[in-house]
Image (tube, rainbow, N blue to C red):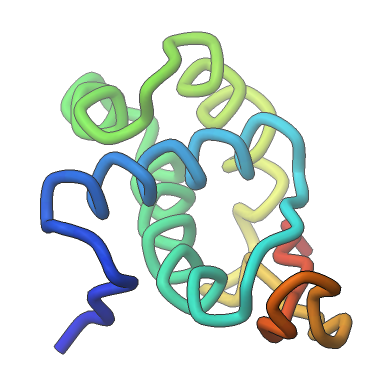
Length: 111
């Protein structure tokens, strides 16, 4: 069962889509550990879809990723880099508590 992250389903989905897009665009994100654990399987799935490199796969990626240029980057740059690798494209590194509310923070990045 997926984590709720204190949000309604539609808001949670929008947040996760935005985080996946940002991670693929920039290569790394600083966020809470809980969110990072939710984002990881989605990013892994997008990279796996990108490795297929068909029109159907591109449309599937477009339906989830919010920016067209990020989809282009996924298919042209990111996915070919992981062609020989079977999963494990994303790393989560814990970086300690956040100052304001002591939430456990992490950096999630592409390997």
